[in-house]
Amino acid sequence: MNAIKQLEKVPGMLAQDKASALLVYKGLKPTALVIVEGDTFKDVHAPVRVATETIRSIETIFFELALKHTKTVEVMNAQDDSFVEVVRFFIAPDQSIANTLKLLFDDVSTHHAEIGRLLGYPETAVEAFLTPNMLDQDDVPESTQEVSRLNMRLLGHRLSKEHWRVEVQYLERCGEYIKSVSPLIYNEITKEE
Figure 1 (tube, rainbow, N blue to C red):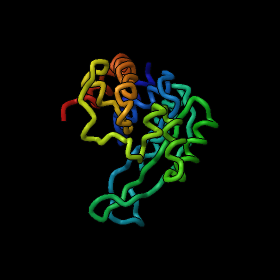
Figure 2 (cartoon, rainbow, N blue to C red):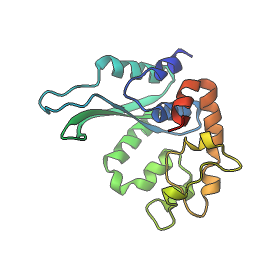
Figure 3 (tube, rainbow, N blue to C red):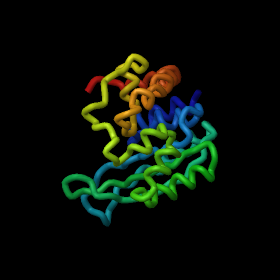
């Protein structure tokens, strides 16, 4: 599919976000937040914008994948007293759901659970987030009997101490799908550090 080939080429977007868009397209994830960053710049009065053609290309890709979206654009502080323009796309199969995701992210500090559910995270992981039942990042295994080491690298949320083995099982199915439609994106995510 041409849209997937074009998605592979989008500059400034993490491979993890490209994969999330594909998972929403396939119905393996209900929504996603996809971020594109421009180049850093020093003078806030002379910003370096994400190229208009990049934004148009992304919107065309989402159209071809039948994904609805809403977007925000913001200039943020980066490292070393510099700035970066960040474009956030909130995507879903339905426009009202994409709008809801954006509204929840507008006040992320009070909507963690709703955002987690809307992003398709396992309920037990959502409930454990920011509680003593949240598994430390250092305790997340490289693989399990059900999920390969490479597919574990697709994990994009925190886990619960009690149910983490069940919470990661979907990663195998998602990883195999991404690998089948875009080996390039899959390899970017799963490459050795």
